Image (cartoon, rainbow over all chains, first blue to last red; front, side, top):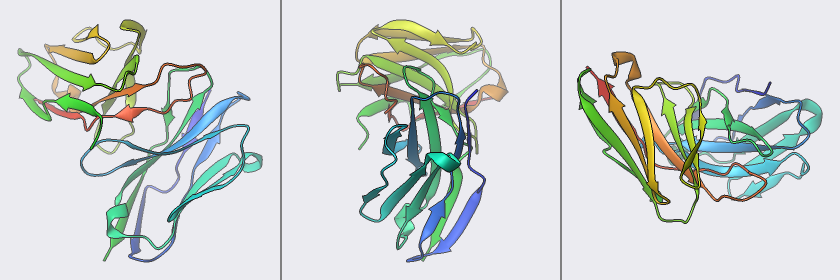
Length: 114
Length: 115
């Protein structure tokens, strides 16, 4: 069975602080993909990043960075110098290669205060 | 702006009504999805269409009836819903390629309230 755990239900920071959103996953498959999606109040889920199970290289995109560690089954997401526009619910998700079912964590609600 | 368009954005219906949710994409994606999201919960998969054919039904009650009339459109017909069906209904699509890498493009959703 596959499972994604986001232990942080809500996080509140002040603008310009760095914040890390944790994600721990469980799967027995050797081929899988991990994702982060952002859901602003408008409702749509916005794709942020995909990582496959064979690529543990960390990635940086502007103020966003992701740390994928298979040894600890974690795929953490860091926002550097947070901004008010980063306020949203962030979902970590997992899909088995070839599957149609994206398994979501419960989400972390991030509030960035001015 | 999202490339997956959902209408209506808000819908209020009674338990005896019949209504439909509509989803449209013009990205040439041949896999389309309906997800249901209750407040403060993650999205849950309902249906998957692949090349306009229903490929997955996650044991959804028959009061929800999906339809994919062509490669760009996905409908969700609603009939005799219950108040607990009130939720945000999200449509998504993706490129049909193997292996499925799971990158989905989501619409903004239709927020349904059943009275």
